[in-house]
Image 1 (cartoon, one colour):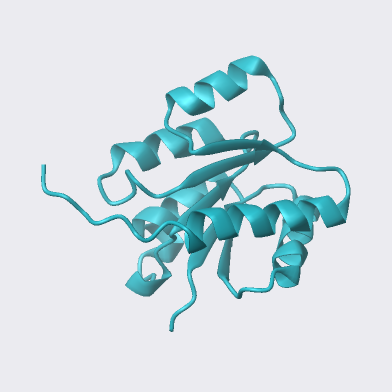
Image 2 (cartoon, rainbow, N blue to C red; image 1 turned 30 degrees about the vertical axis):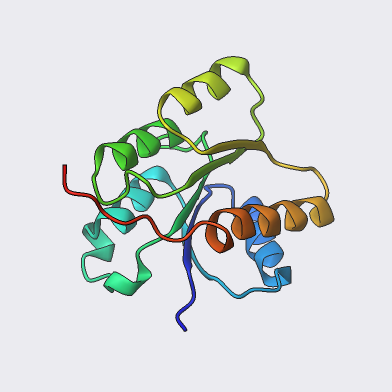
Length: 148
């Protein structure tokens, strides 16, 4: 059985390392791909740039997205994900330090599935990653693609 791929989009190296370590604590094994900014995330998702030869089996089934990133911010990544038929139903979770009401509202308007604030301590962070992954990947079978 192949492992589900999760695209983690995080520009802060310390938080990315913490998240990767947190995923290491998760019982079920996932294939975690790290994009260090929004531009790299879009290249990964759409198989362009450095990721032009990305294998099809590494298509993410879950995207965990930070908001405040250089070049292309998380909202723009989310907007482009939702505009593309391939990813229209892929779960996207915003995981950020921002709890601004305007950011939360904008995230949901653009089609995010969950908006979560990053916990401060590692155990809570690892717990949150486990819960989010289990919820979106274990309980929800892949969406069938419908012709419209």
